[in-house]
Image (cartoon, rainbow, N blue to C red):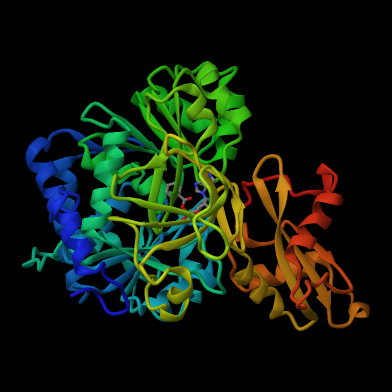
Length: 546
Ligand code: OOB
């Protein structure tokens, strides 16, 4: 039985995916067990000076599973996991998988607004955090979040439960889940007032890992570097750290993505493949032009999460001496890759093609009719690792999915004659801030909570470095009241909103342009921004403030 609030694939599809050999009955727990049996003494995880073998990771997962069980956590219990790129991430999630508990993958950048929502919406049994990371104390955050029965801290526990204590519990009988069960929740980039949760099963996710690992050529000699926050679907599974473990490769963790940390790590560990977002690729390309570090082990640089410009894409091979792989994916499922042996023209100008022959792609107009071949339209998809519904979101699901189960991605694409996708734009109300997704409505709701605000519209503004930044147009209830940009930003931080969602630019306007039917015309607001770009000095400089 699938967890309440989740939408299973119809039986005929599930049968087909099993018959095709996509869904093989593996679980994350059985997967780790089998890798530990096959090559236990090989190194699985490298984090700084720590090197854990597959056998060690397997044993640690057993111990921690018992530890979680001793806190009364078990099958189908939701556990919000907010950990950076540290080895314990794996201990925690494989430990939870071993008892059939379900990680909810929060990002290190999330704050009390998001975490509070995840904990209450999923009725979380526990919340797992580091003590501090990136200068931020997560124990302070935990104190602000009402709800989870247990807060578990990796490091100095303060008033909470220490993770270390879970490592010493006595083994219990583990009631392992079945492969068709939900294994965890990913978060959607979102278009609505609150983030949506994405239930992924062992069967569907492991299929996407296996497919990804094959496409990316991962094997026992590969070394995957986890650079982006590994809780995100892309570095987690495309092929990411889990695809690397699936293939018996070695996973190396980077604590931060800057070249001064990452380049020495690539050299020291002989990294062969890693995945970044376009702004980070730009930073690396610039730094690589005069680095003294030997990056020659790097065979593949994946770039995805947002559109990578063709100009930058063309520089990857000349500058880094490795193959570019474009990745166009989504936490809801579908992932497209350029293939390693594709011609340069395809690598540079397309966002790849789906993992699976059973990924169904439709490109349609606004009425849902197929567009002419090669024309741009809305991307719909259905397949063996694309969800059929968000968690406990029946009303939204009726809009986000077609009656026959296709997910409306909100992306505007065209298909090339050889079946590759080119991303041409977006129809959904979302800002893609260098790969970090910001749902306009979510930010609007927070701004509307300010007593001086009458109305607000949040839209994307073009940005050379991040691709897009966030701009909030605000109509004040009483313009004479004189609320400033700084105060509004402070207000949003005070509400516990993640820093990457705080608008980069705030414009106070007397009223909004309206469409024929009286709705706010975001299209016109976007045009207004493009017509009045801010001088660079007034734009916020950094993606680093996130
Ligand atoms: C990845 O996942 P999400 O869930 O954070 O965001 C999905 C959305 C897509 O619908 C699309 O709008 C955008 O991000 N996107 C791209 C892109 N890759 C993702 N837009 C243009 N070009 C690309 N290459 O971002 C994600 C998940 C798995 C693998 C890779 C990325």
